[in-house]
Length: 151
Image 1 (cartoon, helix red, strand yellow):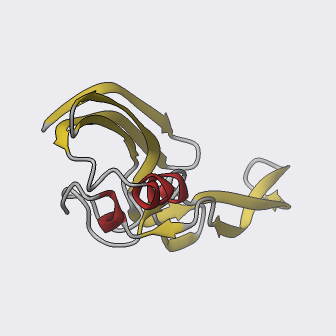
Image 2: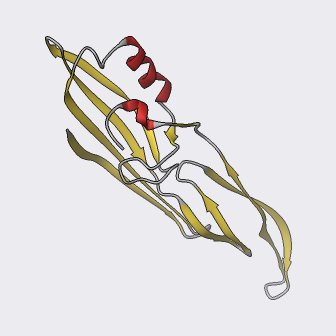
């Protein structure tokens, strides 16, 4: 099996001290026999698409790997080549937004901040002050063991 990095993107926001790294990769493997690529297996691939790993997978902690889907074709008698696509985003701990500390989020969770007006006596102005941080679950979790490509 071959593992190739396809694209890498890093976004940085100094305002909220949040750094997001995104890596897309494709894992292609040949030699999947008909006995493996059954309608049930294709259904499992369909059901796992758009889910994040619920356990460690290929060196990524739970919540860091998003399965983007698979495509493949039959290359002969009893021989399938399947390409699996993934994206990775690291889990984060110890995030601080304003005076709010100890924030943790999994890689594919979404963090947003609620601000309120506050007086800044030194600047003699009204400023926005973070009053709450929310972590939202964007993708459901799933067991990537069903992919049949190892842990």
